[in-house]
Picture 1 (cartoon, chains in turn blue, purple):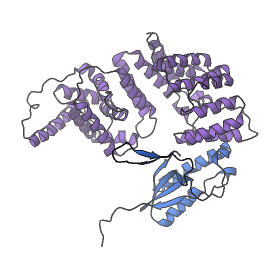
Picture 2 (tube, one colour):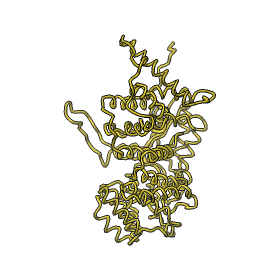
Picture 3 (cartoon, chains in turn yellow, green):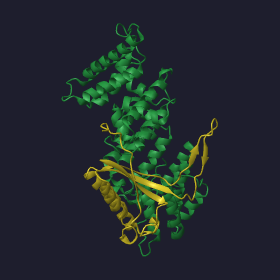
Picture 4 (cartoon, one colour):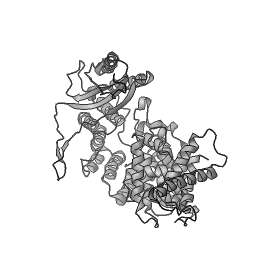
Length: 134
Length: 389
């Protein structure tokens, strides 16, 4: 099995096919979208492939140490290029299966009840070092 | 009786036999895990747990003493500990909520030593690894080790810890809200403080509405739209009775005032029958007691219901716009005043700032509703629960 991160972006991903911001949908369309996401997770649980899922707030700040003094911060930035909205971690047998699940998630319905065809970023996890190496 | 309910009493026995709190608590936790893993429950769980915990404690102390190469004093004639059996659990409440502990540590320690939950269960409830939670608990105990613990603590810190546990919600296999109610009930029996009763009433009144708070798919259902036939009338009756007895003692505090507001909501057969005038008065009391800006914000909502949205917006002008949920409250009042365009903007803004997924989805749906033409405005969604949080 291999773990993959499915990254959802607020900003920074190529524009989806059905590109209407969520607060311009009808309430029923919002409900249908939410339901689709929950069903996706339930299905991935049922197939033994779901690991975890988290959503992030849009606010973010860069931080670094400045030696002895208090931490130095930069931001939050109103318009960063890339803004992650959340993720789902899956644990699957093959790369192809990971693509299949990502495509499935990307087809969540949006405005007009039509699939958003949103771009999701798929990132493989580093694996545990194998016990048997030769 | 559930084995874990015996935990505080058994810790008390070990401490009276001369064990220090940290070691006693560890020993009881180990014995508890053993008891939970056993195929058959012991016939006398109390005696079994004391014996097993004392054995664990001696083993640990012996290992410690041989490590240090000195004699084990406790085994022969332990000195009497600081507590008597009557106030075992009360003493533990104060100890675990000690003001020197951070709220997160106090919550974890209370759930383990007073609630008798295992580290694994607490970790699962707070979504952190078990090792992390174990460290949090042992750090908390190390912090308590050097402190003089003979004086009774401040009840307010205990209540704050129990309130936090209750508010952590309903996730995991442990029902934290029900656990908070159990612990508060036990504390109310032991103290007779009106504020403890007030907190218990507040919890019962909110718990009574639990089944109707979320709709299909975890969708948030605002108070005004909840199916009131699903409210637990027995819990409401109990909460109201406890609150009335507490108020009669004429020592008002913030939990009693919050419970009074919850009771007025519970009392209304429909959202339209809510006695908003009295709720505004209680928010006034609460504001005098706490001075909290969040209370001021919630009071603006209540004024909006009692005297109309324009009056609510006027109240809101006195509130700091930087507060969480300010935008959602303003959006709601503007919607009721008929300004759907600005309400939509503010609902969308509130959705972007929401700190939980159900809240964000609810607010997004509100913005969408404002922007969807040809929809009856009959189902007046409310963004606001009455609890000032």
